[in-house]
Structures are given as structure tokens and as C-alpha cells.
Length: 123
Image (cartoon, rainbow, N blue to C red):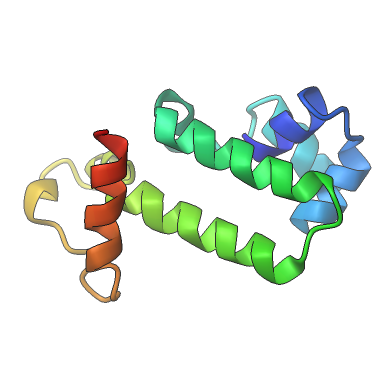
């Protein structure tokens, strides 16, 4: 999503997008054409589209690598908090009890962040 936004909304070349994201130009091409990176339909969630726009706008200027890393880490936390990875677990094991699953947060100290993300998404 971020790669496509940088190319389509900001007019960046694939080579520069690849450099900013730390991937190859071929990977950017595959992301752009949705050949890669579509294990979970994240684009359907308004919250994720906003996260993607925020990351893309950060990458357009002269981004501080630490700020970019923080935004990607927060994006992962938010995506898990919204329950968007549960579909992946269901695909891996259809009998998985995702309602009581602790994979995303069982070994992390993200419990408080989960509540704040869910509260933000319902407002």
C-alpha cells in the first residue's frame, strides 16, 4: 500500500521508493501490482489506509530513519490490535480459536495500545 501511494499519489519513481523502504525495485513493482504483500486484505480497513497514508507522507520528504521505523512498528501494533491478522491464523489452522488467541499480544506489552487503537477506530 505504501509503495503504491508513494508512486501514484506522490509521483515517486520505483527506485526511490525501493531505497526509502529498504527493498529492491523488483519488490516495489510487485507490491504496486499486488503480486506480493496481499496475504491479508489490509486495504479494506479505513484505519490501515490512514496508517499507510501517514507512512507515505513521512517517506516523501527527507525522513528520519528512526521516525520511519517507529511508524512501521506502530502500524504493526495497530494492525494486530484491530484483529486484522486473525484471518491469517484462520487460514493456517481453521480450527484455531481466534477469539481467545494471544499470539499477537500474549508475549508483548501492547495490551494498553490495543485498547487505545480500538477506541480510536470506533470514534
